[in-house]
Image (cartoon, rainbow, N blue to C red; front, side, top):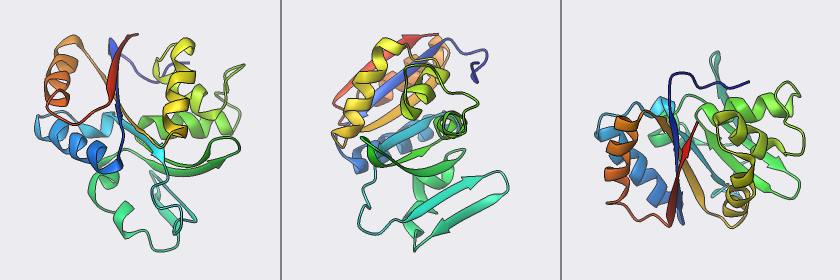
Length: 174
């Protein structure tokens, strides 16, 4: 089951630091792209303070003081979740990918041979062959910014991203 309709591409950008990903999302937003459509995935950069948090359509639930996740880029995404998955460690995810991962953990969207992150990425439209690459990027404390869109939208986002401090990017046709 695919959640994304009427979009032709998934653009994945890898950033080495959280602040670089956050700055890029701000620039993407400023270019006119609806950031509620994009996803952010990365290692928990607040490992020593974060216990748990999620936000769904009925409000925000969290444990501990999470002021920085209740504002800024995280508050602009269409959902935010914190997970600790064996062999992956703690990570944060926001946007449509959060819902896809939750569905995979609940068993409704689990993809044979893929873990929760891989299943979520696949549900968004990323081919199984790329999943290990992105899982390794997250395990290496990198951050993924995942942008769905049409040719024109992705061309605009790509021009913005090229002016940021990214490590690499890939374009996936869906």
